[in-house]
Image (cartoon, rainbow, N blue to C red; front, side, top):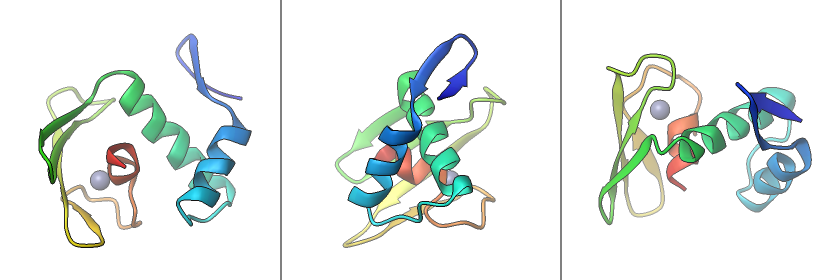
Amino acid sequence: MFTFGYSPVMNLDDARSFAQHSQLEEDRPALRRIARASALCHHDLVQCLDASSFIVRSQNEPDMQYQVVSGEDSYQCNCPDPIVPCKHIIACR
Ligand SMILES: [Zn+2]
């Protein structure tokens, strides 16, 4: 079970089934990213601007926010995370 503060947000099985559903890796870092993405949604840090763009605020740094844009068949995020999809993109999905 992953926990964030006092609220358990997503357990490992949920993260794994999301990974399978979204055709993501199922290794530990990937599952942790999914759980963090779930936390972003849980804390209302994902804001939908229109059908294809989102603002995701940072959980650790409230002043930071990233923009996620969905294209034809892929998402793009302007955060420094080199791993695609990053947690922001997963959260938007
Ligand atoms: Zn990102």
